[in-house]
Length: 255
View: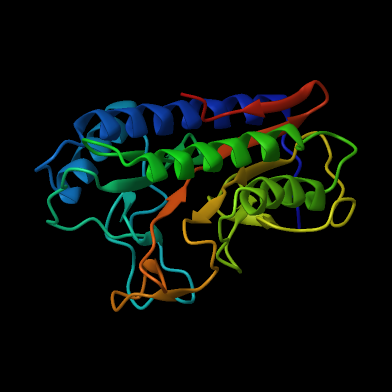
């Protein structure tokens, strides 16, 4: 069931979203060559602590997971698409890093992700990230009253496919509210004019995931969480929590 949020609830989710935005900004600023992924998780934890927020990631255990998630961020490096567990891996020059973070504040959640290059970037990585951000913007632009979920999915998928990138099937966005994951699902590929109608008060996490090689294959790493590209090519993941309103999309996790 899809819960429509009131304006007051959306404002509360915006407050949570700004905590997420600060955590991601802090993690990006701290992500230098030689820094560990666990250190980045510590940076994000401190931002949440100072805001009086908790993490919907920490201890989260969906049906597919062998163990509860042990961190407040997902840190996915190079060929890791999403759900990377922070470890003592030290960042290297040229690493492509995707950081996903959520916050729970006063009973409401928000969720967002960024991708960037540590140190000296490869032009191909910059193009991949730029396309992911363009796909996210296209999906957000389609999140208007009168459209359908399929319009968002089509906008995201078209931006990815037109640029020649792959899309991991079965993973995409979702509703957000009292919990980090709510109905409806928001695929990263689909047909326009299909799916659930968009109504004012719906809050959605829109999150393109792109594979550089143009192939869609991925597999689960031995940790039971991290998804990696089958061919070892690099991946990017970006995300915003967005409210559908009568006056247009409102990005609750804008940085």
